[in-house]
Image (tube, rainbow, N blue to C red; front, side, top):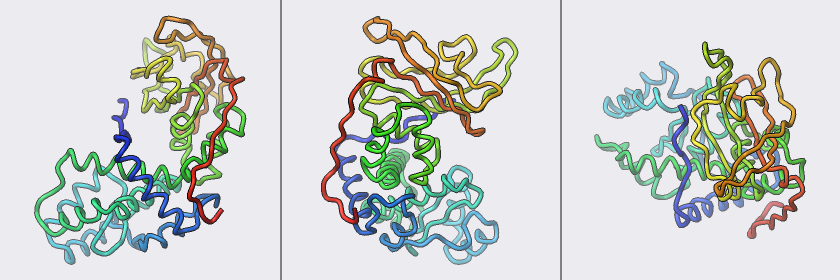
Length: 311
């Protein structure tokens, strides 16, 4: 099932979140340091990662004794849904040890966002000391803000976009930059599309399954399009990519990558565009990058953001 939107914010909220993220990057002198120095950022935020994660069953018992039954009950409920926890009272974050290393990086920065955003910190402290919980609407807003904080810090503002603009326009670029920034391929592919000045779109798929009647089929996990692509083509709402889908020929069945393949895509005005699609299989997810052929000759200029230190 396609994941719900997890990052949209109104311009005012986004500006504030990115401003706080920029301040942390400044304090940690983390600009242009690769991979993004998470430990330095945590130190600058005066946060620690718990040596024994709250996700450890033994830690739950300790937490129960130290925090009380109500808080422990909330913790157990949260553990079934999330991989990171922010404890504002002790300036400690808990990360699930079973998460992939690159996922842990994003989780640490996400929980740091809760700590660095003043409204989050106050709310978390308040709700840890009472029996009520955040409303679903506020919780969703906080998660979106923390996601954008983590994204901005991990990819160092527009630094990722500038590096991507200097590389070949293809699926290999976000895959390679993921390693440079210490990000997951999943996060890097999303960032490649959403921050790109060219028209392009990335499909993040679950692993390909063989289904009777469809043959190969992959469930769509998320679709990330650049602003220019959305303006030209809109945002697709595909739930599955099957062999008879326009992107079916690109599914990397029995191979790691699919070479660039020419496809015809109709835009919002009914005009047909010659496009190129290529795919990469990480063994966890399959990523398909699609873009109009004319974007290969487009010129990209990205001006650096102001107020940087440690460069």
